[in-house]
Amino acid sequence: QVQLVESGGGAVQPGESLRLSCVASGDNVTHYHMAWYRQAPGQKRELVAALPGDGIGVTFHADSVSGRFTISRDNAKNTVYLQMNSLKPEDTAVYYCEATYATSDYWGQGTQVTVST
Image (cartoon, rainbow, N blue to C red; front, side, top):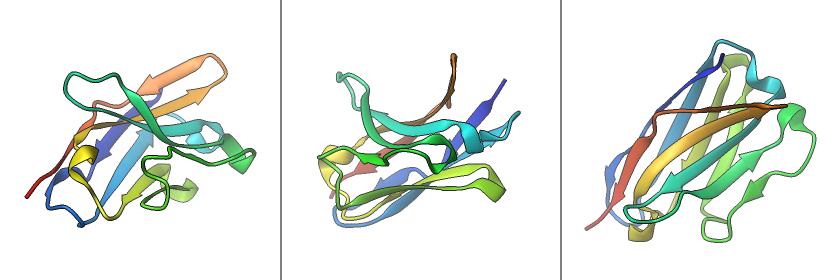
């Protein structure tokens, strides 16, 4: 069983930056496909960025965040990050971390990001 805990969210102004962290426990997630999703009020949950397990495969960033957000992982810390630069009001959402491996799928509780003047 993998537990995921997100942190780093907050309230910022447009143009500012945040770095979200997702710390995993219960298993080494180096082999896991890791992803960040977000869900704004009244909207469906959408995929923001994803990293393949073991570094095999393509790193994905949604068009809406490409060039502004970067997903990365630190295997020594069992942690995945989402660096978010040039934040916009439309980035406001709850951000969730997901870990998948074979048939296992785990989610964190989410962290709120609010971008407003």
